[in-house]
Image (tube, rainbow, N blue to C red; front, side, top):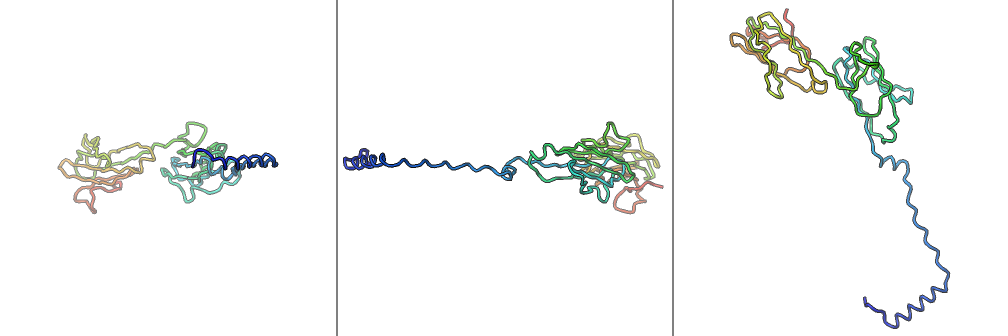
Length: 255
């Protein structure tokens, strides 16, 4: 494009400007309105949150009824303990994500009942991610029958020596670390005697643990069981001539 207009073009431009000055001013254009977000669109854009309650049954008995329901309604909804939840078991109850503004003022009731008729209730549960322990009646330390904590659980192995001789070494080895730890037969465990091994762990970890029980007698006879779970169980250390299977232990209390 040239930097300056020539004379002919300048004249034409002057005529056009003059004609425009004699005409009616054009109406100004109306600015395009910004669309107002619909409630649905706002909800989509808003942060959403999920409620997840991990329920631990530490009542000492089977829970037969468990409900979590919105306090604004009267319907209890689903029984989450349908079929029974045994003592020591735990599971998740998960609700779909909702916009944060809808959940801030929500309140729920968690209510349970055991097979023995013991009942518990907590009426100000919020929309959150939380552990909920259903407590035994004799474990209560406050006014409610639940605690917002992962409970401790205990493994207890009662080990009976029926090898026919003294056991001089007895170890409970964590398979994850391989650490033998304490020798529970440092003072020899005589034939016919028993010893109790106890462990305490958080419930959400205990189910993943696996141990090896290993023993040695005075004569050098050895035995091992490598897939022991976190549980309460009797364990008999068997004599070599009493073996009926591939392992040197039995999960029974001897007669």
